[in-house]
Image 1 (tube, rainbow, N blue to C red):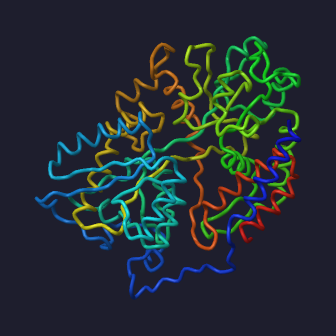
Image 2 (image 1 turned 90 degrees about the vertical axis):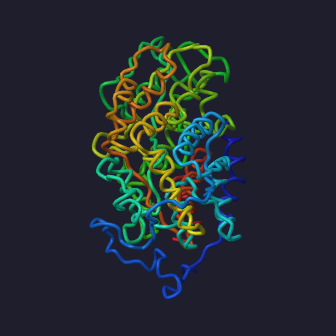
Image 3 (image 1 turned 120 degrees about the horizontal axis):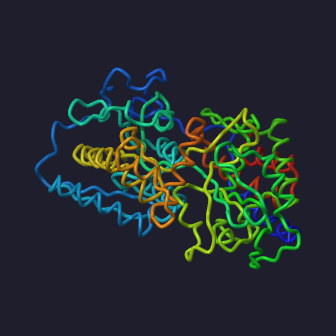
Length: 480
């Protein structure tokens, strides 16, 4: 199977290596006389608006009486989209002259591409969810506004001390320290495992300490069956021990755990170092002995189907996707724990999930209405309710500490519909102190490019390429 995958990957890898035009210099030069509020032209010494509103964006004293319509682009499907619409309906009841048109754009790649196309066409939505690397790209076109004047406004401001510190830091990483986006649907990764198979194999997965890669090596000796047939669902073995849903996250998080290099906010590509090479060589060995796997092994985008089918004993994925890993008929018990770490000295867990931004091509009234919607969606009771129903995490301390959310974290019955979401949240908070977010940058090469190439590199490694080959090609592709 590995030989077949290697042949398939040759085409995928080659496509990745040729699908991005490289520039020796950043082609974007901003005329600060014409665009004084562009991120490249603002200077706040990297500190953010710590002493109050910076006076960059006009904040109306009140919403006008005439109707205001805002368009909100998001990525949520039917279930999450319906819950979002419930919040929007409540918001519109509080502000009868505001109409919110919420439109799902599909996945994150689609919403980024659609937003970039809309920027080019001069027809952007009013507000949009996205990752920091998306926002960094929008900033190059002066297409999003800093939110600091709203944040520190005496009428409409919020207490930043109530927001999770690492979420704020992620949104303050842009030039000048201004917040061009605001925390919204945050998540991290967790690991699910088939408790029935581990019990049958006589192995107890610890829930009171960090699981290490050394643990995985030991368990693989017992649980990986080299003769396993896909779909056979053996009682105490699997084809692979552990799957990693996101090849990009697997690369980036592993680099951090091995104290290697990835990128920084200046856009430097730092992967060509001995620690990163050592990590990739280790992972390649674990790919070869079926300890580690990627969804590519089954020609899937995620490992959830094969986890439910019993082909893989453990799987790492987003807390927001926990329910995709639960067998619909309760065929086996699922355990949920934090992500494994290489060792205990350099622990790392990805901080992910989108933020929300307000676009520049908007009126003052639309901006204020959008900000009011953001504050409504992120107030304590709503961020807690959103988190409990979706698998995301509250963005405010008061949301985490609310009575409803604390009761949610204490759910201990598998018959409760929120049981597995609760376990995922507990796993998330167990690794809260070592959340890491990706540096966001845009230019000739963007942080989105770097993430994509990190995933291509890990998949190519799985397909048979050497550690040095994937690093050399990643560096070449990113023009470093």
